[in-house]
Length: 361
Image (cartoon, rainbow, N blue to C red; front, side, top):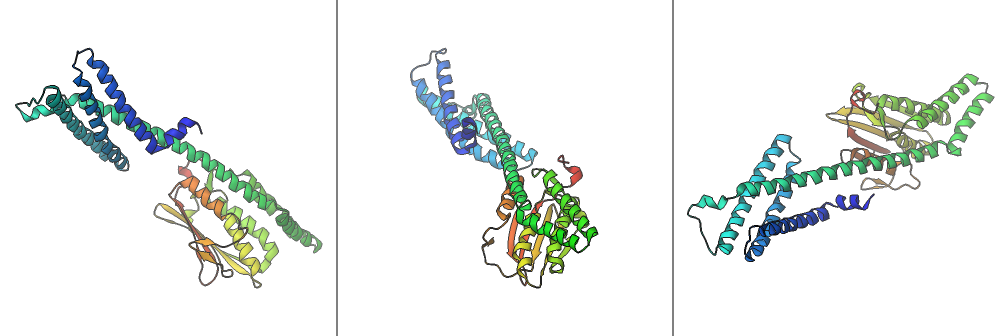
């Protein structure tokens, strides 16, 4: 990231720097203009007081505008205009008071409304301040969005590479190819051919799918079925899988291969450690504007603390959380809990987005 972008991204530092520099600039320009009017030297002191008053009065605008940005456009506009007008009036009163009290040595107008003299000039200055604030704010938002896209790309790529590293791991391929070899020796050539086809299709899907883009859930289910059929060759009846996929959820968009590492963990830490075998449950349903995904197993008890598993060489959990964070910011949840009566249950909540509404497909 460029130094300028780093400086702009630091909101507190940027605001106070520009706030101070802006009002200092106002005082300098105003002082230079006073030479044309041949003002007395005391006028410099008044300019400094006015600039300092403007510096103080515009600080609350920052917090009002920040709050207003979370409201609807109409409400935001009303709050911005009204608060800008109130601050402009207050600043006009301060400027007139300083001018009359100091420069005109205690002059007081006959009518109270004269304190609001030159309000238009104050409105222009406050309008410029407001325009600069929202302009810089929008630039910061664009910069943040750019950073999130870059981070999502990087994290998704890392998660994809780690997943592929396991898929292409000699141990994984050895088990699969050994099962195929056994089928051939047993003269079950048709089954062996089907297994080769499934392995080829699964690896092709893994390699072809862009980890940055999202795909319909039904495509993910097809890939998971291929993966599980390969694993069933190793575990046979010891591996039982139940599906509970709501029809409405099948067209929802999900990050590619987001569930495969969870199923992989269940096989590694649950099914393989149960002599009689075990069960993996995969569910998906919509709830309001959210898509709820769940992978659960009935494996042996696992130590947990504050939603974290105590496992060595765990596969994919950290990458899944970081990938969801990059793709959805704070609009997601990733919860790991004990399943009842035994096992682990992982729940993922992401926004419910339909394939036909996305620009990614």
